[in-house]
Image (cartoon, rainbow, N blue to C red; front, side):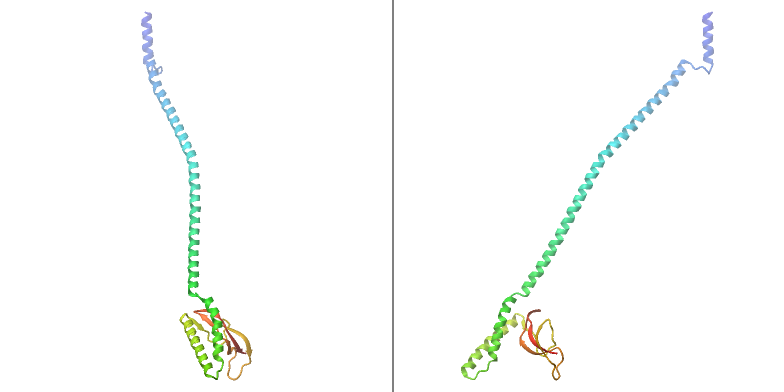
Length: 213
């Protein structure tokens, strides 16, 4: 009889929805345990990912700084190279111009030393002679003078125009002034005391002149 009563009580409990059985308790607990385990795994994965990102960022910062430093060095080296190249080009241009100037006015020092010789030949030709020997000597001097003058012209060494020209301080040297006479114009060269010469466009010696004022 006692067994019958126990069985009836169990059947009543089984039929009552408010009191779950042991099987139901086991079944309902299992999904919760699995869900909790999954959540824990996800959290651990996220933590690992964050740690990896932080480690990567920490490693990238020194690398970026090193790249920046190297780029600055490259830029500085390139700037120095460009400056040096520009300086070399300027030097080459300057040397080329100086060489052209030297070639253009080559021999000017020699010509300056020859000019007094021409002056002396002109003075010798200005002397009057009365005998035959003097005439022959003067003729020889004239030949030397003509030859020398022709040689100078061949090398573009020319006499500076002065007589009856307007005074130009860049090619004339006034050593005396006189009063204007007749139809003379002021600042006009009235007398040449010593000839001046030019080598191409450079004045070797200005003409020494007397100017009317």
